[in-house]
Length: 218
Image (cartoon, rainbow, N blue to C red; front, side):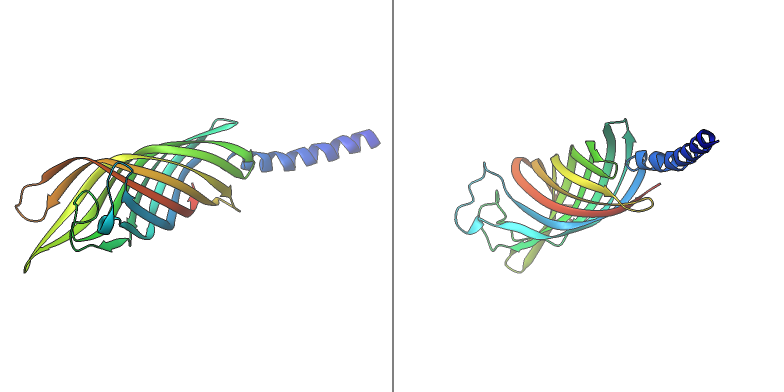
């Protein structure tokens, strides 16, 4: 009788524990949506001479949304992700070398990202991951020639790499923090109206972001 009772108790404990273990295994699996916010700074890269007045950077608050899908392969989590981010960053430079931010009043526009990530579970509710992919960003430019104003967008293409931590909260919610570095190497100057676009060729623009996120899995 004691043996039977012990087996029943053990079976009951296993039945209770099994759903909990299954839930833990799904902490980093499936479709996710998230809100993002953090610190954003863009500056001329190492190949650009920014001595003097052109040694400027664009700094501000980054904010946006992201979406992704993760697959828990056991010890490794694989995912695809996309983001749309804006920024409050702005710098006002009167003149100078257009390789830097000497184009007038320059502000950061929208930032698009498409890439993937790979992570390992430090425990059931903590994921350590690295990420990388393609990024396209715009920078809004306002230049003046006497009383005439010229507005244009610098449309840039490049790559992004980063790393972060994601923590599974109660239910299907999660929080994360990550650092990412972007480098833009191709650019085009897009004018408003009928003015033709100008290919700026190769550029060297660095971007550093520290972002926090909160989201839900479905």
